[in-house]
Image (tube, rainbow, N blue to C red; front, side, top):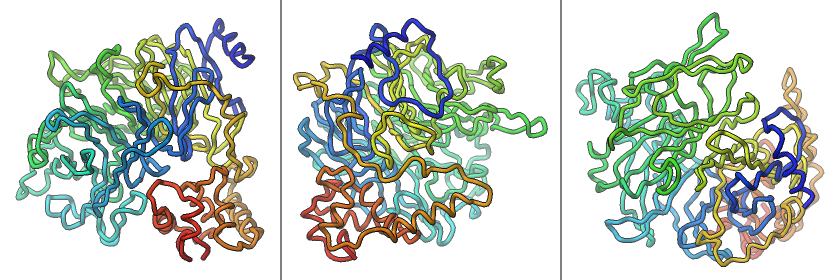
Length: 592
């Protein structure tokens, strides 16, 4: 109650972001008259948590990557605690029972980052769409006209949790749809929608890239088709239009038609219906640049610098039908980087308009912000950015959500920072995730490396949502009071790198000392107890990997560790029980 009164006492004051090296976690501010009342769902380091508006824990689940509630009342999430790579998905009921599982078993596909449950009208049944990396060989790339200097190199590596692409291969993102029986019913891939202006003998050749905004330039300057080429990280489905939107971290999102067969999706019917973010990528705008003796830059016509959580605003909500996207704000050459939320109306009279054709306005800033004026698309109809340069910035991850009262919920990934703003950009609710990866659950958080308490996304649900209606929503207390997560390290050990990589050396010394001081293990039971850091009777991949890092030091191999974890996790639940550990042979999860 005291915490709530403190928060409420701030309502009459002016709210603003400020710079701080030490501060409290959990609820920082709440204006109950203007905030949308509900429950916030988020995942932190392998578990999912549901909190009320005061930040009190209501429910938790032993799965946690990017959870969301479904209209049937269940919770859907990825299997592993890593948005960038996971085997598949699990659907849990309120009590945590697994009611549906899907695992991608095809060797050349790797699910990652985002997924959405939809109702497929053609099948008259629910299906699940997800982003998947798809292996592309050097030979395949050269065959369609990729510049040999930009094609996957011999012996090169892909990058999706070690699951893809070694030896002259790369990863190109696809969208896969599966039914409830696990059958692939539809697929679309960027690789089928590329264009080039180098080799006129190839069928995807055009004289001018600017004439083909509906396809992706495979020979874009500066970025070869190597590794994790596009790094798509979010997607959404519009049931009224039967369309899918997917974004690349490189600063664009793309709309495609879902009303196609898989074969049709490979051809012109699968080309982009609309794209937004960086017209220089299809030669209809200027790229960012540095000028004035390297002291000032220009964003050119680039609108987004690192995109996450693109979505259509749902029907019935303010702004319905518009796009909402988290703009991380990197690579915009604004002098001072910060993140933004954009609401974008890409249509006129029911038809998509190419953004350069819509034009731009010149956006200027208060002189004390020391930001370079830039071209802002006229299709951006609302945006949020902190007036204080240091108030809101997440260089990776992050999310946003339009709420029923017109407010927008924002998740700033790298700092575990959730906040809600009104259409007038007034702050009405603010929360800091207290759960850290290495340092336990903290009531105050200090100067740490980003991602210490990171959260990929968060979602707000009303009390009458099917997942919550009729459920026991009695608060159990603040997370910092009721969640047990022992610290693995002391925050004081985090040092800012010094000249000569002094900290790197001292870190290695500390790591070696930790290995030397580790008590001798008597068997798998002792090993299990040491790995089960949060003492919940299960070992997550995060706990498993942390133990392996501590044991092996510089010899740690994440790919091998993940393979060992998967082999030990025999029931494919995403965690290892003591029984599974006891049965593990030497060299797997057991003692080697």
